[in-house]
Image (cartoon, rainbow, N blue to C red; front, side, top):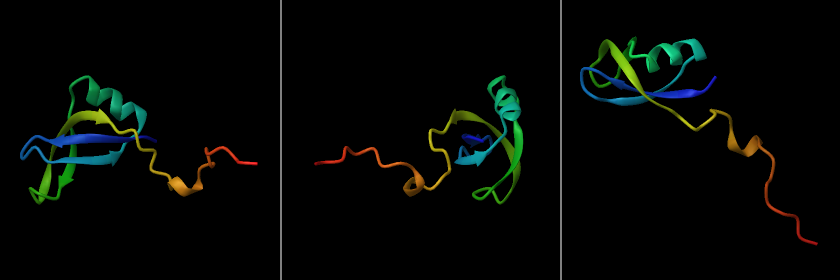
Length: 70
């Protein structure tokens, strides 16, 4: 499940959320999703900003891409 960067319609705060693919498709179509905003301190409508490239997994668990010397 990719993280998606959303923007609060009330205060323009940006925050990443884990969202399923169906919700991301709806947001890209212009719909909003209600989420709690830490800045507004209330539940507000959020709009799509972009799909975050981060996977949410610990980066140290990935394979070592450096070439072995020797």
